[in-house]
Amino acid sequence: MRSSADEIRERLRGVAVGLLTPFDDSLEIEYDKLAHNAEALYDEGIRTFLATANISEYHSLSRDERLAVAEQSVDALPDDACVLAGVGGSTATATDLIEGYDQIGVDAMMIMPPDHTYLHEQGLLDYYRELDDASDRPLVPYVRGFEPSVDYLADLTRIDGVIGVKYALEDCVKLGAGIAAGADDVVWVDGLAEPYAVAFWAEGVEGFSAGVSNFRPEVGLELFAALQNENWERARKLRNICLPYQEFRDETGQDNTLAGASSVAAVKEGLKLAGLNGGNGTVREPIRPLTPDQRDRAADLYDQLDDDINRLIE
Image 1 (cartoon, rainbow, N blue to C red):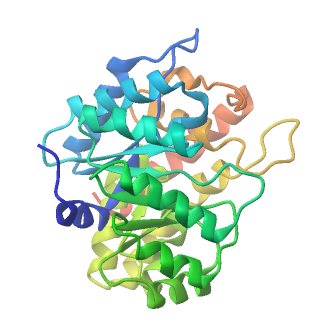
Image 2 (cartoon, one colour):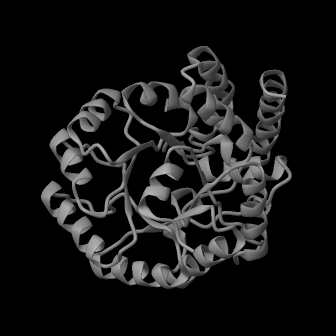
């Protein structure tokens, strides 16, 4: 049975883990490994899951693969888990995908950042209203890749079906102003993972998406508890132990100048090092896998993270 809007709001007040898509060496999806990861993360205490998200390589999946990944995620998890599925593209494409997700039984739609070169704030709000009309499932827009006004953020929260906003801009001031101007019943989620959790929490964020917590969920759960309890010193320590691996994710990789190119492959390597399924680190273009040197660095950073977790948590 799918969660109610209030139940989803409560799940957004927590740690949202992205379900990465494991591929075999032929770049075919390994659905059984996807299910195993979801079950293992649930057993660790995670209750909010992002299927077909950016970190799931949403843009490299076909429509049918997105539906199959979402369905596998829903089927693998108990009823008290909340599954949000990624939606994007043109209004017609997104509506078609929403209708497919509806049949599968996802709890909510996470509307991906717009992939248009030219944007108009009012046109983007119209887009969300059209998608809201396509389903009775709640929407969680993902704000990333453009610089909206505070008025836009406030208007976004007043679209009927919007119950949460995933905010992934490095601008705490705009975040705080948007929260203050927005509707009171919308949950704001830190979309920049653990490094921004403490600062964004002070502005009114109530949950965050996972970075290293995608493969070491205990870090995210402990950080969330520290934030809820206003234990700022512990929260900062927990954030800080995530930084070295998160900074590794932000690197350009080899023969490239674009930041964040290693992000997905680095998390898949983290999954493997944690005993979960990273699909042998395989990724689809335009992402590249880690080089041997990067895998060695990931192992060293993971060992450091593991030592810090044992010191702070266990």
